[in-house]
Image (cartoon, rainbow, N blue to C red; front, side, top):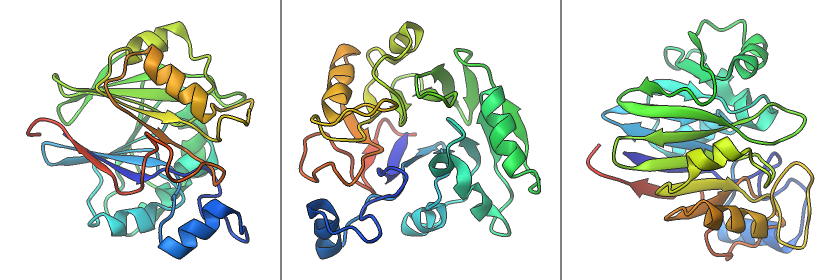
Length: 242
């Protein structure tokens, strides 16, 4: 199993248009960026996307233009699903998996596109290309939002790009002991955002669930580039031989 961070940014991305803060200036000077958060999972020749960001076209071009076999939507916020339209006239529309209400909302936006909708209930595992996938509820009010746990039978990956720290107990249990966790860290420790975690909270949650390794994602331009455990666009992780 191979995982690639296609993006690690929040809704505006970094650099932010028109912003001259230190992080945005660093991004421009050093030709780096944080595209909107999305994760590519490769296993046994299949390519699975968790979330389809508005930067999807650029993300796929930067990563070898893989044919996407399946998509998982976590929730109905624009920066997590609106890139789905970039598949139009490019490839066969991939199957989409999501919690029923997420699929209903996002699917209605793209009702003009022919794709197979696969509603799945949280906490009930399903299979995609030999991977066991489980949606778990997180807390990102007012939008109903899920995180994802993926396993190839040996390695377990957790992903929650949008949530507060008060994740439901059943979901924390599902995340417990993952080999790698991708977790929302929107702002530095001195900030508090009602719908998200800051960097300190993200690190604390990762420690509480005993993740072997973690990367912060969904970071705003307020987050410094050199903080430990912050994900980088294009960063890859390989497990096993799949």
